[in-house]
Image (tube, rainbow, N blue to C red):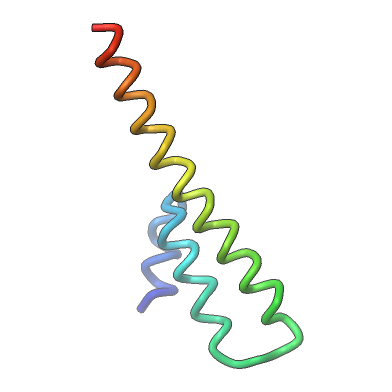
Length: 63
């Protein structure tokens, strides 16, 4: 279900992060890559959130 959510919300970094984590349930040679991609997607999600908040604060400050 998480992979379906990630596949239908392509621009949502949070869903992307969760989608990657589903592949890390078993240790395989790709586990390190999967975890790294998940961490990058989570960081992208946070970056977008912070940029939106900063934009709103600047807009509010400038009136």
